[in-house]
Length: 66
Image (tube, rainbow, N blue to C red):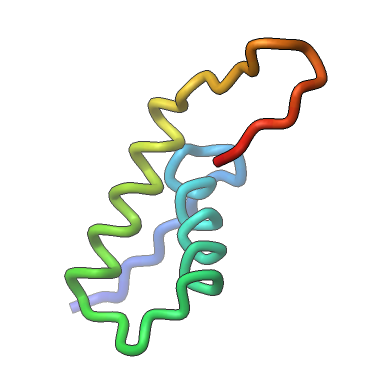
């Protein structure tokens, strides 16, 4: 069996989702990142990258609460 190396482009949705996943992992600090948590979180990040929500405030310059 040969090892397969996958190269993701730096602007690909998969790469951006992976970087977002890394940030989420740091912020959430899961006590034990299970396989399910990793896959679910990455899938959520990928979905957020592929289908972003347009968050426009009602008034220009108004601060948004997330």
